Length: 503
Ligand SMILES: O=CCCCC(=O)O
Image 1: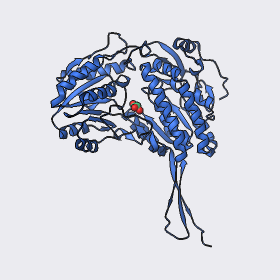
Image 2 (image 1 turned 90 degrees about the vertical axis):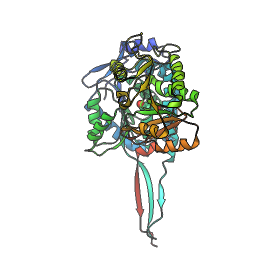
Image 3 (image 1 turned 45 degrees about the vertical axis):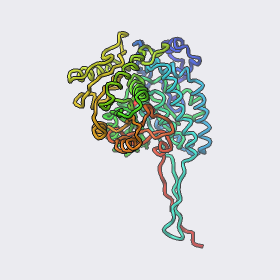
Image 4 (image 1 turned 90 degrees about the horizontal axis):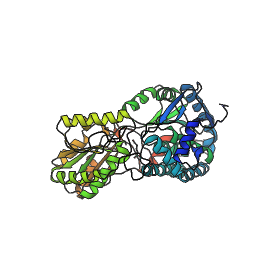
């Protein structure tokens, strides 16, 4: 833990220059544990590359169970001091952190685009979205109200208080390298919990930059640690270590299930934000222009690599052709390229496996009768770039009807009536987000209530905001993030029975 702070390696310094960062100190290639910047015990590293160019932009420490255990120990040591502070005091630290994140928005966006690929406009948006969780929860921590309960006896009183659950751990994905961290760290810190974060090894620099700013904002040592490395040893320690009382994970359903099994022995409280298979339903009575705009925003956001991206677009018979034609026009306006370049709307996919999955889904759909209206193949730019794709005549027997494609592929299914749309929409083991477009108020209520999903966008293609509860049902997970509900996952209810009131 006493490793002297070292300057980033030359490669990362060159990356900071190439990105034109105003504050090159944001780019760190050491992990942040217990308030110190450290290398892996064994000195191992992992290369981090730019998915648009394939170039290695730097390395990060390849840490494992030992370093994770150290971070958890440091968090546990910091817990008493952090929980003892008032909510207002914690909020002041968080507010400073929020302001620093927003002041560094451009640098953070450049770092994010370099490691994740999304367009700079999307990265700037994500920085603001990510920061909003810190701002929101700084305030919400002040409202972790308890309760009084009418007593069962005249000489006794019942009081319920909410307390921080203790050391939290977070495992976060590569598709939203800042927002998925702040959506967990915000409520943890506000509730009085220290937290250890394991960012994806593919997009660690955004997380480490957040840690730089947290340190500058005065988040005490140990209250936030960022451990970098391969998922298995770090996840193994986080799930088995009894000091960790709460684990929050965003990622795939199979990995969520594994973490749940691994957490069983120490019975951790879990938040799992897992896979989706979002239906996007367009009824005959929809405002078609609005539906097209919503479909593009929902489907092609982050090149289709978002758990709430529309995965199946269900269109009613009467408007099928008209909607398909207008959507094709809109898809034709998307610009694929390096996210750092001006006017690019659609960056590369994260890696070669993602490109192969999109290809596999399209090939299967075409073999089963789908027609390619737009795109359908790797982009001429090569590498991880893929053409925004529109498929017509998709049917439920295709792989893309059951699995998340996680790429820029929009399959259009056809349905006859409301009952069929609801049946098709719910015909999946997932239940994260659903969307539908209609102007009939009766239908709007019926469909909203019939959809078995945690979130429903009605005449809206983007539903994410810090003020609303984000989360799923069925195999899309457990718990809610954001909003007043999000802090509950980091609190425990304690009931106090006070007797001895007799004079
Ligand atoms: O993949 C899931 C990330 C969720 C992004 C959002 O909050 O919309």
